[in-house]
Length: 196
Figure (cartoon, rainbow, N blue to C red):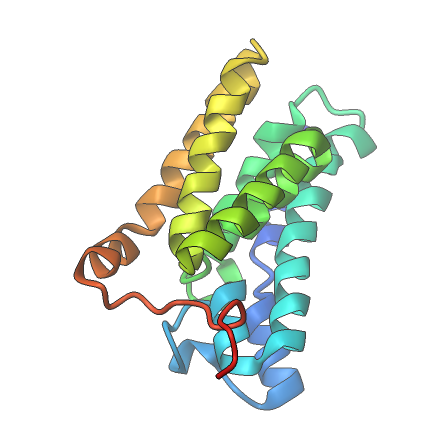
């Protein structure tokens, strides 16, 4: 059974909530709008707050559920290892031509299952960074770096390795955003802005 769990986790991760919510709820393929990304950020920008929240929660919880499979099936595989395949599925989804999100929400969902305190810490860091910088992409990358630093103090090798990989992967997936930030063309969030 152990060898099936990564496959199942990948399939769970491949569920494209951004595509499902956009098409079924709004008749919109978000891949044809905004950044073209299937993640929560483009869902917020393309479909609105309610849809963005729904997509983000779906992307988080599929990581949480995938990581829990190792425990539910009493597997010898580590939950973080199984959850990693959900992140891969989210990023390269089977059901959306292998073009998915940027790994942030689903990675967070995996950590929510295995290390809830780290998840809450990163959530706080993300929103603090978002308030200061107004960049979702930069806040996501900073949260990834903080996650890796956090794990170094745990002494848990598997946590350090998996989170280190996820942090690197998140930054890699945001490399185009880094270029836009340097050029000052990266979109900023507006809900922190004061109304005139």
